[in-house]
Length: 239
Image (cartoon, rainbow, N blue to C red; front, side):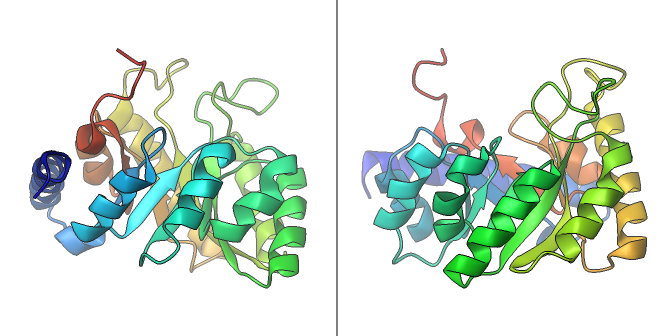
């Protein structure tokens, strides 16, 4: 085993242990929570090692990094998630490799995704990114749509060829009433998910929680946690 593989295996084991403990504390089965490893800024070699270690879900947030990496790893049994703010001019590229887009937050993006999914002959799962710090414009500091905009986007997604409305995603806000209150933020997202499933019963994915707050997300009921640093290490240039 290479040094890097041993390092990743050790980190992955620690994260798995944290998720298992959080599930046990919440009275949930470990199989109720999917680990999505965020591989942004890390090379395709790391993705290949993660696949060897049993990881099946990986996420990227920039198309210029993700597209060549996904192509290089196209032989691996991976589910690719796109989690970054997505500009419409990148949609054609993203649709070629992303199985799920977790950052759908405006109608124009739904239209672009649908057009390119149909062109590519693919079905792309979509999560609506919810901004719990949305201002008067209905937008959040790090993207996303305010809670009041969920229903309209969900209905649009449900009627869009090539797309599937799979659920909701959020990033714990840094400002507003939920700043520093991750558990409360994730519980709010779960309430919004319950509302969404009344009209769209299959939209049962709830993506919340990262390296620092995955326990709070699991306790609240998240189905997917997005973990980068705790598995791969501190990202280059970030301290």
